Length: 184
Image 1 (cartoon, rainbow, N blue to C red):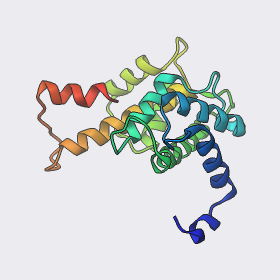
Image 2: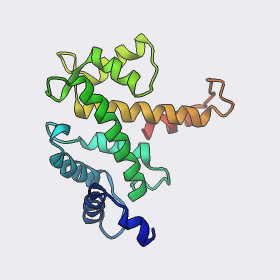
Image 3: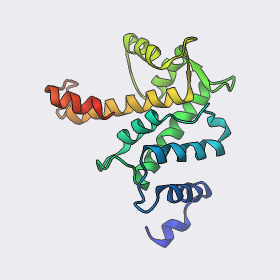
């Protein structure tokens, strides 16, 4: 990265880089625990991204699995920037449906949010998302929402990687299936 590129960084990007460098340590990569800390710090600076207890460690592990393109089990700065860009896009959709600012949306609103994010599912899959991510009142909080979107993004990406001829059908053996589903 040249000096010209650095000078074009926005103030948010400079803060973002500073937080990343502070937490990433010597290896300049972040693991799930470090990602949890970063997300907590970032969420604290963005009041519109309320999350009751910040992102769970499991959500952070899923985020790493989604964005870990080099297979290190950690995120480098570029992978983290890509993740943050996704979260910001998904957060805008979430805010559109969280009209009362409770940091949760109904499972019905979740259907529209999922569609707005470009995931096209059927009724059975929407019901599965509600069972998996909604609370007993059928509401989905921001952490669960992001966890769901990370999972959807990861599964679609993995499917598309296996669907090399683009016909919408893949064939996997049991080990490929386990590899696909266990690290997501």
